[in-house]
Image (cartoon, rainbow, N blue to C red; front, top):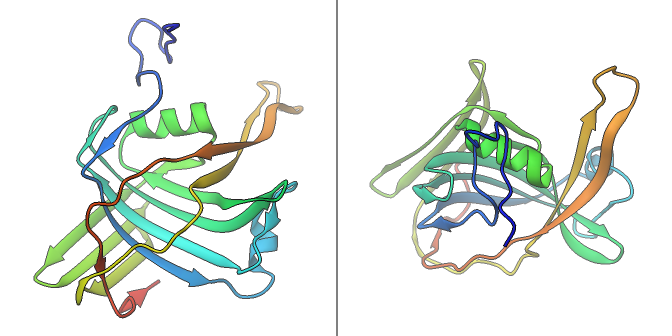
Length: 196
């Protein structure tokens, strides 16, 4: 295997992919977007998915190849060349290594934010703040164990970098990333108490 290095070459910020995760904890909510919203967000050549589904997640990754960190993302159902997946327009993380790896390798539009997940008895609250502005808040009451609905494991991103002279893009194209995960335990909530 070829040894590749991220910048700076003498002290790389992150290791070669794949990035591995263990014992991840996710607070997730699926919802339906109002008609016409997905089309305003999803870039060409992607197309909005038929169900107008959205998925918002606040996650804690205690053990990964790039260290522990929190993450929150929005996915919107999308298709590309008849392949169903999700487009990721927004994603927030808490460490520089996770931000750089996500942006540089896969084109995830990551930004740094303050992210937390608090569990108290049967209540879970996830919060995302950036520059003192509350961006996402999910509150849910656990009622028992459940199952994860079948969703596509393909995520589309728009990977783009502007030239140094500001005249054009050095690169601009769609990236399709196929994720793999194994679900160990799912709790269910009747519906989020607050999804804002």
